[in-house]
Image (tube, one colour):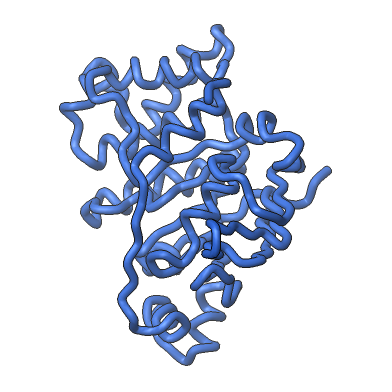
Length: 266
């Protein structure tokens, strides 16, 4: 039985002469809540894209749930769910239709589709809105639906890229309540990015900080604050990565690539 949900050894990604991710290594235990933090352009998104099979690594070893990325990509895609930073729901479908479409594409068995959708919509408190068009939903409701959708196929790992970006504090807390409950009840490993340092400090078992393509430290929130002699994780983060403002150019199409690969399309 494999010990780790995620194993990364010497992972590197180069784009011509630019090294976006530079020989990083880390492990994530089963059932952990792992925060992957860094300034804009540090290599977070590139790393997640490699872990979720969107990008092919230049070199290194990646294993998810015991499967090697280079030889078992299809098996890997079946074992994780992902919630992207940018919305990926179909606004012209109802909540139920969005869930049902995802279930079919991920080959959820026909006999379990309806009870599983009902279970998850109730879990995120959207059952009463199952027949409403997603275009009528607030940002927080859409986020909750995306989380429910990401859990449809019983993933062992859930990747969350800025899951609460732009949400008010009340909705942010509700989102994390759902995630923590699911982590506890189903033992799902959580791998997430966020720029809200209070979230990472509050919920993560382990924290890795990446900057300029390299992991500069991996520890707990308390240990990071102790090492930097700061009172908050945000202060510790700034102490470790500097005060310089970073820019990042992000694509909006990547969120569809992992699903397309899972569905057997190019």
